[in-house]
Length: 192
Image 1: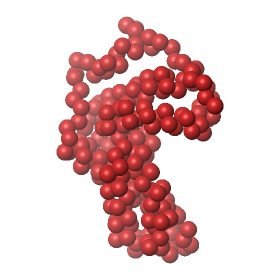
Image 2: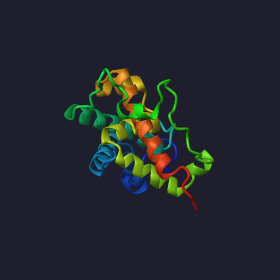
Image 3: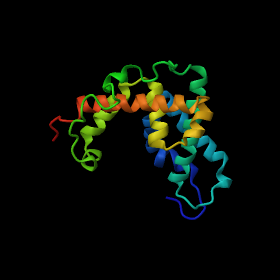
């Protein structure tokens, strides 16, 4: 780790490359796009060395730059591929089946155990990864951007040129998809 304001760009790839790639891959769900994001991040960091104040570690600074590059890639990707259209008369699609006529859950939640223990369980992360991979890539990306990276909803809407209602609906669909997948593959499954 660097001390003070001294950066060591020649060591960034060696020190932080794997971390940055995994971070980008978890969000973008595409190896090629993750590689592009890391490359863009390192180039932008190299060009912006003079702006580094030393208030954060190199890794934290690079991660901040990477988050912006991920948003740029998702924005570009969304302009090249149309987003899923939401039917105004049925915004919930197949997930409507999860609720009864009063709007309550048709099936009660399965017992998931201790969330903190699940968070540290390797099998949970494998199941979560499989669940995200089974989702449409756009929904998984949007979920990761908003819920994991913590991108601001208003900024996501502006960058992807979608309405807040469309964002909410897509996040709802991704959460319901994850819920269903985790219930089938995680909740109630015997874990070591």
